[in-house]
Length: 165
Image 1: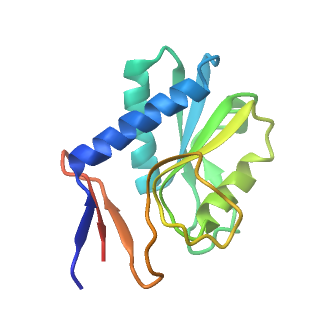
Image 2: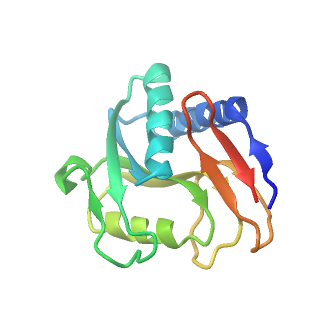
């Protein structure tokens, strides 16, 4: 199968910067927010957003790694920080690709056990093949693809790219 590059390193950097500005605009009145990245590429993407956000805003950013079994999302979900560290704060749940919505909706469900000021979601690629009523509040790109196609995000040192196969 061939690969079609959808986003190159520079385009991803632009998307990250735009998403960071959108987050800043949404949470402008907050002193601190939590950016919770779903383990793997979601966490890498969350770190990239946080790094840009730190350069453009005075908001204190707390990073959180969300450990979720993507093959069994109904299993116990854990986070790298205790619940009291994100309680009553603004939170953005981040993943790389929103495909069926399964991972994101189970991640959202986990955070609903704790009172939050504001809760948003962010993804780099929104596939538009959802089986759950979930949306990305901040997204890099929306793609209408066939169910047989696969979107892959690759984060490498200075060589980030997204391809379709």
